[in-house]
Image (tube, rainbow, N blue to C red; front, side):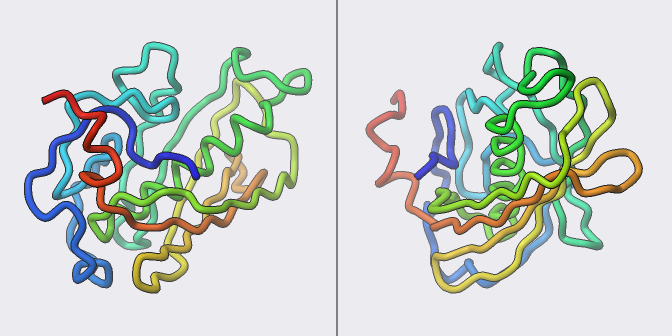
Length: 180
C-alpha cells in the first residue's frame, strides 16, 4: 500500500467517520496537499504534491466542480526522463496515483492505495503542456475506486489508471509519526 497522507497531521475532529463516506460536500476550488476537512497537516513532504519537499514535483490540483474531477496542469522537465525525450513510467504512475488520491477529498477521507493499474497508451513527452484528471468511479463502504488519465494539449489520452483506495483512520495509522 502507498501512503495517501504524507507529512505530519493534526486531527481536528472525528478522524474517520464512515457515515460521511457517501456524502459529497462543497470543496474549495484549489486543493492543496492531502488535507481534508478533518485532517490538517503541519508539513507536507509528498513527492508528487508536497510544497515542503524541495525535491518534489509540486503538483497543484483544482476541483472542476461541474465534472467532480480533480485537474492539474504541468510540464515535465528532463529530470523525469525515461526513454529519450519522454517521461519515466514510474513518474507517470506517481502522477496518476496522486490524481486518483485527490478524489477521496470529496468524501473528506484519507485513503491508501490498495492496488493500481496503469495503461501506458502513448509516450508521455517532456517539456510539453500536459494535464492529469482524476475522478470517482464508485464508493462501497471504505473502498473507493477512482480513475485518472494524463492528456496532451490536443486532448489525446497518453496514460490512464484505475485504483482501489481504502479509507483509514489517520490517527490510528499515523499517530505515532506526528510531532506533538
